[in-house]
Length: 339
Ligand SMILES: [Zn+2]
Image (cartoon, rainbow, N blue to C red; front, side, top):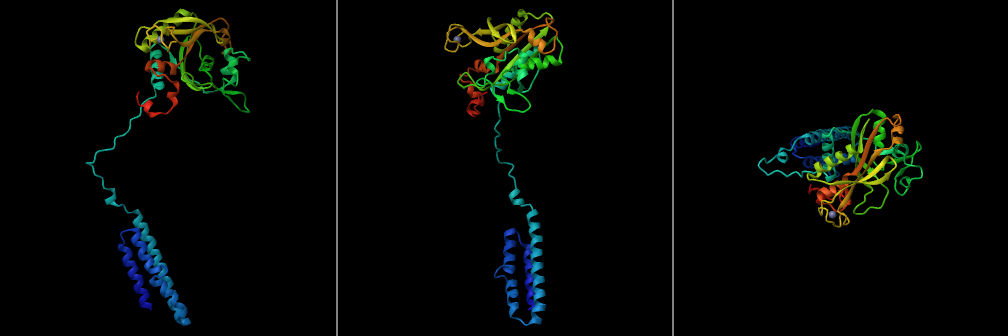
C-alpha cells in the first residue's frame, strides 16, 4: 500500500510536468484526487484498516494528497503564464483592416473658418463659461428684470443654493467678463455654445453655436463695423456680398441693427429660403450701450465700440445648403461623413 501511494504520487508528478494545457492538467488531477480518483480510493479504504496501519498510511496518503495539489497549482501557474506562440502568430501578408477616419462637424469647420478670418483682421479669440450667473447673462447686459428673455420658457435655469444660474442664452456675457480684465482698445471674437429653452424645428435648436464680436476703442464707429462685417462675409462665402443694416432693438446695444445679406440661394430674386425678400437675416449688432461699459467698470462715455452676434449654425446651413438645423446634433454618420 505504501508503494502504491508513492507510485500514484510520482506518476501524477510526471504527467503534470508534461501537461500541455490547463485542461489536460486538470484531468490528471481528477484521476488522482477526484471523487473516484486513485488516491481518493485509498483514503476511503483507510476506515477498514487497523488503527496502527490507518495511522501510518493515513498520514502518508494525506501528505501525498497535499503534494499532488501543490504540484498541480504550481504547474497551472506556469501554464497560465506561458505564451501560446501558435495563437500569437501573425500573418504579415494579410491585408490590414481599414480604419474609419472621422470628420469634423460642419459647425466646427465653420467656427474654425470664422476664427481664422477674424484673426487675420487682428481679433483675439476669447472664451467664457457655459453655465452663467443671472448677472452676467442678463443684468450686466442691461436686460431689464421683466424682459421676456428671462422667462422660464426661453431660458434654462439651474437650481443652486449659491445663487441663480442659467445655461447661457448667448455669448454676450463674455463681453463683460473680458472687459472686466482688459482695457481698450481691443477687438475680440467669442465663438461658443448657447442654450435656449424652446421647441425645436428645422430652424430652431435648444443648443446651438454663436459667434460674438466686440471692438472697443476711443473712436470706433458704425462705419468701422459695416466694413468689418462686409469683409468677413465676402471672405467667408468667397464672393461679393451685399449687406444692409435695419434698425432693431437689443438691450445691450444703442443703436441696434439687424444685419441682412443678399440671399445666395436665389441671388436676390426671391426664394423660399429668403421668404421671397432676396435678403437673409444673418446677425444682430449695434453700438455697445454705455450701461454695459459701466457694468464692466469702465468710465461713462469714455469708450465707443460695436458688438455683433451671429449663429454659426445658420452660416453653416447657408454655406453647405443644409435645410434642417437639427442635423448638426443628430449624431447621424450619414450626415456627418459628408464633410
Ligand atoms: Zn432667396
